[in-house]
Image 1 (cartoon, helix red, strand yellow):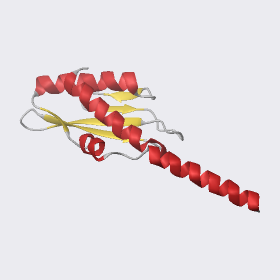
Image 2 (cartoon, rainbow, N blue to C red; image 1 turned 90 degrees about the vertical axis):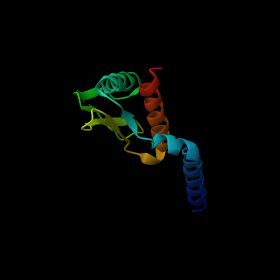
Image 3 (cartoon, rainbow, N blue to C red; image 1 turned 60 degrees about the vertical axis):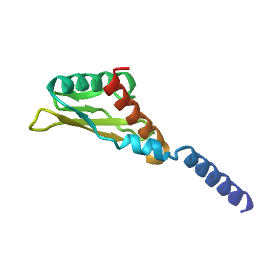
Image 4 (cartoon, rainbow, N blue to C red; image 1 turned 135 degrees about the vertical axis):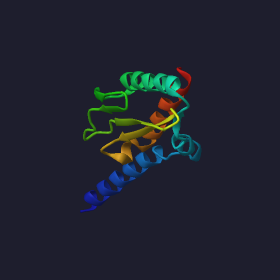
Length: 129
C-alpha cells in the first residue's frame, strides 16, 4: 500500500512539473490573440500563400484540404501533435481576416506549443521570414 502511495505521489509530481513547462506568458498570450488581417486582395493573396507554406513546413500533419478560403490538415491524433484549420474571411472592402484554429487532443501537453506556433505562423505570414 505504501509503495502505491509513493508511486501516486511521484506520478502527480511529474504531471505537475509537466504543466509548469506549459505555462503561457502574458506576452505570448497577447501576441497569439492579435488578429491576422490583410488590407487588400494583393496582400491577402500573399498572406494566404505564406499560410500554406508555413503549414507545409511546420505542421506534423499533411494538408488535407486547401482552397482560396480554407486550409485544413489531417489530425489531431491521441498525442500532442497539432492539427490546423484556417479560414480566410473576406470583408466587403477587399481586406480579410485569417482565422487560425489549432487543435490538439491532449491540451495539457501542447498548450504552450500551440501559442508559440500561432505566433510563429503570424510572424512568417506578415514578414515572409
